[in-house]
Image (cartoon, rainbow, N blue to C red; front, side, top):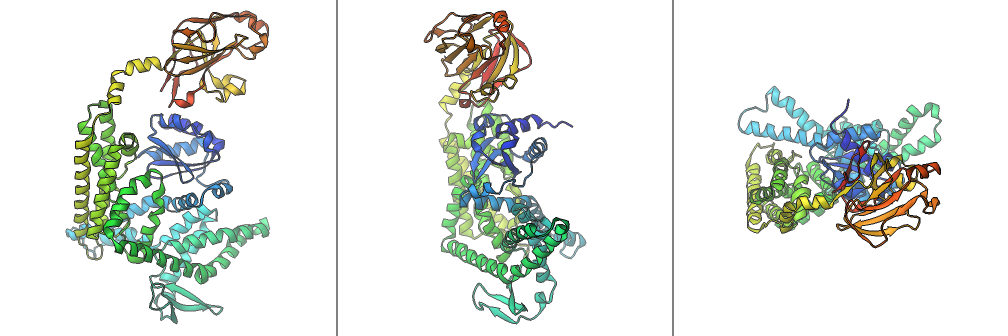
Length: 633
């Protein structure tokens, strides 16, 4: 069954370099995230100009096509039509990345698949706290208990779920990854180690303290004081280790018994190493990161809020915010709350307020029509349409939104607001400021206050400073003239065909530029634009024209007709001549050329098509000279 996104998906696949250029593709809330073999093969300008695509970003080793809220639907069609997997097919590609890009790619690959459910369960937890505060539900009720079990259960058993996503990222048997996560939770929740007396305590009196409950062949098995519930670093490191161990056993175990012996030996080796080495190292690393971030926050929560609030939208643009997200997970696991993501909560609202001001002040109906859906998305925490479509191209509004977000972040830092769960985006994030232990809503009221102040600052500053771009107004007035300049009329009468129908690879692959092919029915060629004859081959079989608006066009009459050395061709212009649309440039004898054994299929190519967002044309139809052939955008 055809999807309404089929056409868009085909354009995306073709212009990221085709199926063969795609290593893998995933998606987040608004973006398709491709890993390409060669990003130079992607037609970025054309993708940016395609309806349904907000913009394109190249960052963190990924080629990111920003779609908007309906990206899951587009992703489904793209993967179906392209036959793509979200898993990387070539490990060497990861090695080509810089360490920073590789880190971002790894973090996003592990956490991204779980983020939607994490936000959903966090929202349930937040709303339950709200219902208890307003006495709609009692914590003792069955309704509360069932909903809380899913709200808290997902985060509590996080190591199992991250075992799955990390295994997928590191190319390990995914059930092996889940088994390692389950072992962490089993020791944490079920065995005597979870309730028994500790034999001793390592690093007692420090933030690195861990209890020793048993030994493994004389080696101490340590459990961090907070346990492994909701932890993230131990399982990620454990699965990474498993990826190396599993690979080793795959190489030495016979195929006939690989199915069960590879996971068996992998688990037998990795489970002890996880508890003896990986777990303790991960706990120390987690504590060290916690000490650094908490110390920086304690030094000046206001400065931290201003700084993170100011740069958050810039990080989002390049997909670098994934480098910050794990810190919040560490805080949730060790502290039960987070102050890092709280500091950037006002950013999406500040961006939305700026767009609201632009929508009220602009006289450009098209800009206003773009603003309305961007405002709606912004209130739900999705700001890419606002950033890429409205504020970033106009620069000053974007910086105003960053200033407003910085002030909002400073206010949250000043008041010491914290989130107690990973809640939803935008307005759905407010309940995450309710402390579920006390069901007090003071934090939520504080978050609302900070958001209102940030929005007010962004709105007022934009209303005061925003001026309609004179160029934009001029563009509206001159749209018809510009369109006329960007219309290429047909230089020939005949049948319009695709460039791919030409046997010459230089034309069929688009190496010389985008365009069409025409099978002429009349031996006359006219100028498709107003401009100058910049090239006229001595053999008269090909002409290059540059229009007054800068369009560079090559018309090559027939295939291999250079071998005729000018026979059957009559040029009516010279190189350097000025011409108008419709002026006859060349005459040729179709029958004579065909009798010589040459194809008359004629490419009409825009050789600088990479300077344009898109070329609109229609193939499979008959056309007459002087009729519109292509429109350049």
